[in-house]
Length: 317
Image 1 (cartoon, rainbow, N blue to C red):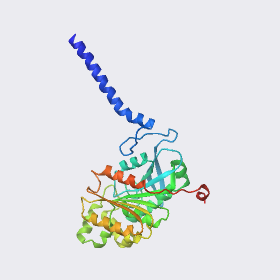
Image 2: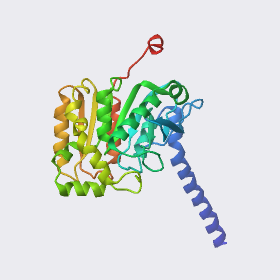
Image 3: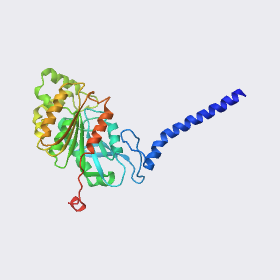
Image 4: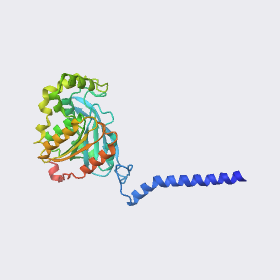
């Protein structure tokens, strides 16, 4: 008899525990559905409010100077077009800040990633200049009528986002392309350092930029290609082109004290003409223990950027 009551008691306890767990996980969804919960795209899972136009992911292929490049687009939910973030990878950046991209999609932004020429299984040869050209091609792809119709891309509201080696190319393209109004520079490589390289520094860069994920070029070939074209990568030349635009500078200070000097330098350089937000995080280059704080900072900054509204008649011209 004792065992029987003990068994019944265990069943009751288990039922209570399971019920509590179900309530724990379903309550947020129910609250979202009823509109009583403040949705946090950083902390909350995807909530599909628009069943007719749900969030989705799409693999894409586009041409860049005769080479087919692979990419992926995260489309946010909702009918019509949406502001879109175009992400320029680091070197070789296998993760692609995927966690930040998913948060941005939950917050109402489309996000596109792509692989540069000569990286992973892409054809062609990798170089900083080729990466810049590939970013141009990706931008043209996003601005096409087909991308607007099939993926909800707003061609007038595209934000460039560059990490590490992708930093210099997004700053340059934002400066050279009048339609880009906002750019994120996430611990981007400051190529001005190449001007003051010692032979030992050069050897370290050559070794650090040699990767199996970039089989098309050695580290030495990559740095050798950059050095004769330093004027193209000097951010001092971007100041005029970035005038009136929104610039977000995020730096990681733990691995190099020079990064603090870099952020002060670029912030002073651009803030004379641009809307600059500069933040230093006490973390490593990958923002390993500051990704949530970084994501919140980026999302807060994005919400401060006024979107461009284009009338239908003007848009067709």
